[in-house]
Length: 282
Image 1 (cartoon, helix red, strand yellow):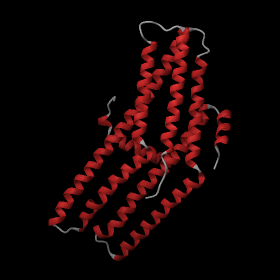
Image 2 (cartoon, one colour; image 1 turned 120 degrees about the vertical axis):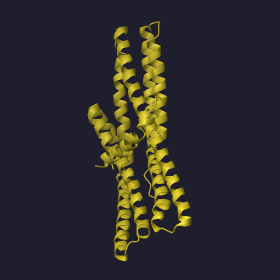
Image 3 (cartoon, one colour; image 1 turned 60 degrees about the vertical axis):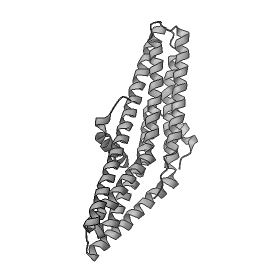
Image 4 (cartoon, helix red, strand yellow; image 1 turned 90 degrees about the vertical axis):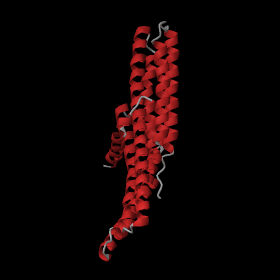
């Protein structure tokens, strides 16, 4: 469910920013043993499940913060009776406790490191196929295999980069909208003393800030840049193998090694970025 929450959050922002899409407690050793025994599909699914759970919890804590702020402002902004305000404050405290429970679970289950190690090992296993290409003796077959591999990876990295860029732009527009609405409401509040205006001047900027914080937690900006960097480099390699002068078998093998090194470097960069996705309260 939390994985679906994370994906739904990204899909909503991705949809809002779609018009802007442009081409621009298990230790590491146990994860390693699973990598040796499991198929790539099994390990990939396991890493995806852990990643969706961790990031889903982060999104959940952020969304709970939005509701908590609303609960704090609603009794005043909606002129609630004392009894209704009492219920809202109880809900506010309950949601705070849920946030703390999520944080404690992530901290003591070591979920973050579990995900990082599982995903890292899954990608290492994925790149083993590239090493097997080097054993192909026929240059023509080797050329076709590398060409297919590069095109698939370019498509994957391009799509990721475009999606993250759309999300970042959608978030920027939402933040500007919340600021403009809050500014207009603040000006109106000078002349009209309506309590409900506090829901605009106080709540909307908080929503914008929390969405920005969620995206910061997910490190979407850095991931977008990394996928774009890898895509550009892979396009360079694709142009090399499809130039007017065919590469001999030795050059193709050297190119395979360069591509393998790029994937390993990219995997290390991803782990460095994802390691900063640390769940925090407040």
